[in-house]
Image 1 (tube, one colour):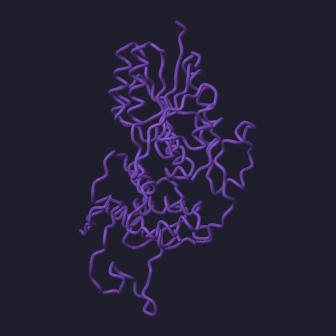
Image 2 (cartoon, one colour; image 1 turned 30 degrees about the vertical axis):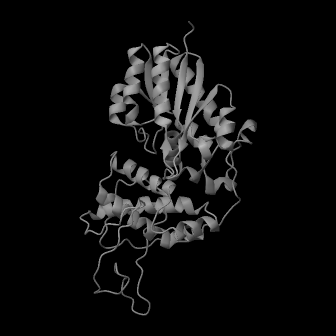
Image 3 (spheres, helix red, strand yellow; image 1 turned 180 degrees about the horizontal axis):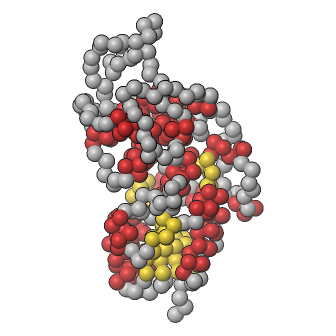
Length: 364
């Protein structure tokens, strides 16, 4: 049998990690992507690294239409040469269902049937570790192909998954930098996409003026929050820290109850779940609060750049419940910044609370 390699691409991981590298936040809607160029360059790297021809690139994502059907972009990706579209579904709450299971089943089945010799897995999900072991037990090599973060390290890859694999390689940084672009900067892009990419790049709604952060001048850091020295230069950092609101006519800072200095009370820590919000005094360090603030402002800045007036009305009308895509992005970005998989409840409540602070200031 002729030897081959294959790619198994977790699109959720690839696009979120690529968006993080390019914009500082994992919000997929914050970037515009040339899918033909991205796929072509991933195939080239796999073939050059393995020295084997590629049998197929398997593209795993959740169907964005009712019943798990593909949207127009996913349909076009599935039409690309040597690409097999493998879709899970999206739950009513916006959660992916069945994607990891499809990846795991394919890894195990292809290993058992000796379909390919070398498998390149573009994912960082620890839940795939057992499937990797199963494929290896039948003689296949499984190599993790990770997206590099701005510092050149693998982005959000489980240490356990790395340990169980046969190796870790990084996607060529140029592959991401030249095929994934910030959506809000697209009208000013100077490089050209390949001709076949023209119909697959996510269309832009037209240039928008993002005066909420573009015209902002640097503000003094809050006295109770020290700078985060190891922070990644995200849009949140570039947009500077938020100003302290004051009570009209008094100059006194607003406290958690919305009154001037001397008032007391707790601020509600909003959650995107349907459970009752929890109030509790926080014990977080100033550096941690600053990191959470950076994450929130980065997500809101990226979302605001492409949100329509209707989008903004919808999000604010649902307050305090955070839309699932934004809530997932907040948790993913904070998890990546902390280097942990599970975020403690205290950080989750603070994250969601500060999200609405950021929305009030730059999201409208």
